Image 1 (cartoon, helix red, strand yellow):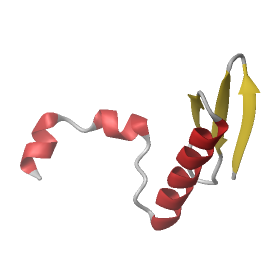
Image 2 (cartoon, helix red, strand yellow):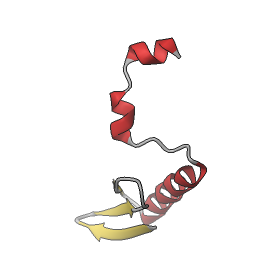
Image 3 (cartoon, rainbow, N blue to C red):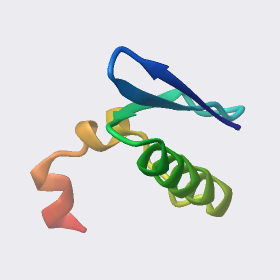
Image 4 (tube, rainbow, N blue to C red):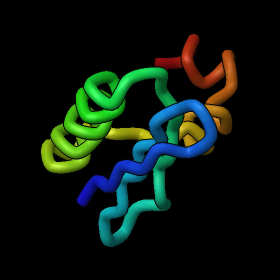
Length: 66
């Protein structure tokens, strides 16, 4: 479930789902925050979401092997 708050001068979106680390990102508008959160939630539901930390663990060699 996504939650939104106005923090400083930006909107912060936070997506929390069981089995996934909390994803947080800041935006200038609430509409952008809602759009990002909805996209993340849909990707999690479909099983296509990769956490940023997981993406950083993939090496260039792994990508070439694919």
